[in-house]
Image 1 (spheres, rainbow, N blue to C red):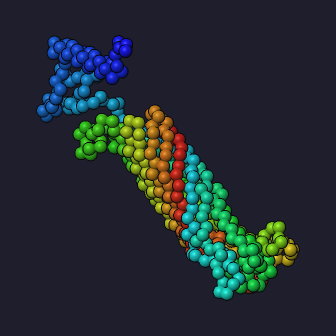
Image 2 (cartoon, rainbow, N blue to C red; image 1 turned 30 degrees about the vertical axis):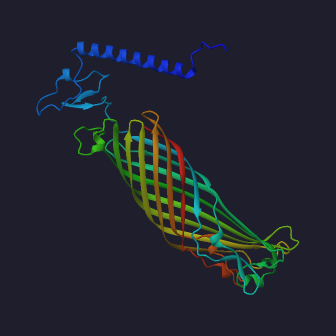
Image 3 (cartoon, helix red, strand yellow; image 1 turned 135 degrees about the vertical axis):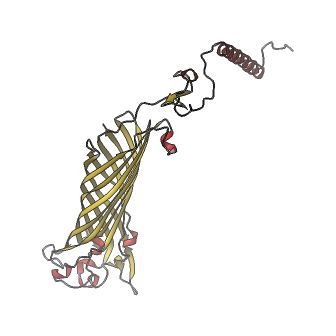
Length: 400
């Protein structure tokens, strides 16, 4: 048998590692010898200079070393430039938010058996994620007292649910399902909800800036030399919010090609005086920002109801009716965002949002399930509802 003269793979790998370690040890030994012979190299530990005396410059490392001096204090790490407090700011966020159907639990479609069975209820409704935008522009002014204005829009939050009954037993709840031929004997029952929200505000802003990095600060975070500044804004102003909510109940009879519908359209306008606060902490490459704003509002509520009978389009069960009502509500808005600071001006934002509205009218609460054909029966408005929206924001900011 012929013996191979090749080196095994494992042995070759071990030899390579041994030679690399030997070369690294020789390099470290040469570097240490050069450092010992160079008297300009600083010691590895430097203490703060006594009060009234400045640190010995010979004891401070060069920019490539580990120590610098600032106002007589030696500290580790390179000195960053003085923090700046931008006067103006612009924010553009793309939103994705979802509503919570905070309406009283009740039936929307029932099955006409004994006893009646709720086939579709309000607690079964789930909203889709709605797209939206937020714009904010502000100016702190030269003395820290400035203003800002903002806009928020969310469109087309859909909620769709469907139930089926091959026996044709579906109908509207209450006496309406017995009184209206268009609202009974259905093989299919549908509910479609569409919600949109718009808001605008104008505020006065009182701005405070902590000056950025300060080695004498009692706050540990401010003594970190990559700290870039803390900002606190007190906010007070006016806010408007407009909530539009549409609910469409459809009952499709056996053999029908389209559903007979009962539509409720509720609009809530809130006019609020609001107060709030916003905090921001900046570092060299990152920032963390959060705000909360709360406003007590007067409300203007309106609603319209209509029926559509596919077999008698000109003779609806109940004529179209509208009504208006005033009231009191609340607007609350909160955000938490992380910012990647690409440079001194621009940053990328990612955050989470909550919006809460109270004293508003929601479409499912306006349906009148009575047997009355009088349009005056639709004049009552239920404005005791609330709505919670939550979701994320991704955007861009500029501060200069």
